[in-house]
Image 1 (spheres, rainbow, N blue to C red):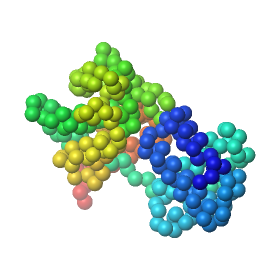
Image 2 (image 1 turned 90 degrees about the horizontal axis):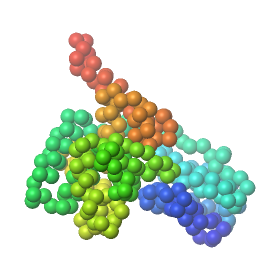
Image 3 (image 1 turned 60 degrees about the horizontal axis):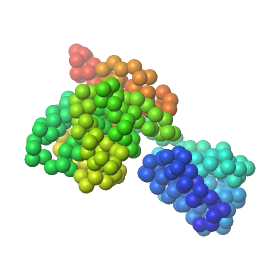
Image 4 (image 1 turned 135 degrees about the vertical axis):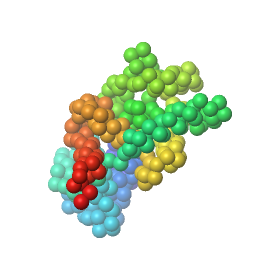
Length: 299
């Protein structure tokens, strides 16, 4: 692909300035590459200056016609919007064709979460495993990763980049660097403080709290596999990802009367609308309780 598309500069911006996760970096890079390959093949586009909203709409229509769901298409639109925002800021284009590109509507799905009684069971088993001296180091790290994700609600990328210097055991808080380089402070329990304490002197050369058993920096697939393997022992949920634990953290807080704005701050959401989706889970829970408890509920 020609340099007139400024792909490498945009990738450097994503990595150094935006500090996006490895997953987002790869996804945005692939999305842009796919788009420009399509434009070059079908419309002989050779530079970013030749791209109009009609060409981009053609590509998006092709994706929808091939059966791609609206959520995936919207992710590609987000990649293009971020790309053009960068180009405009550096005066590499005069205007953005994305102003005339609208996102397809997506059906809102309720966040998948683990019921509280099931989560208590999982926590009890993990504590039992930690007391087993024969427990392998890899399993112990996996257990502690799951505990940390549930106790804090942090994102996978935030867990991987959690630094030892940002653990305050005296105040029982951790400092997390989230999206858009926004820092936030999250209180932690005594139980989690004891877990994290074990890692502060482990692998002195590493600034990160969690590392692989060999001391290398964690990578996303290790965390995904660890969480999926552990959750598969206790739950039949189809989705068993680190993000399920984030949803579980938020839902349990809300069910116990936590203020929605407080949950927003703990999760690091930019606006309240992203947090409000958890209220739907609480409504569904109330409906279930009502149906089971009300004399007329079962009719």
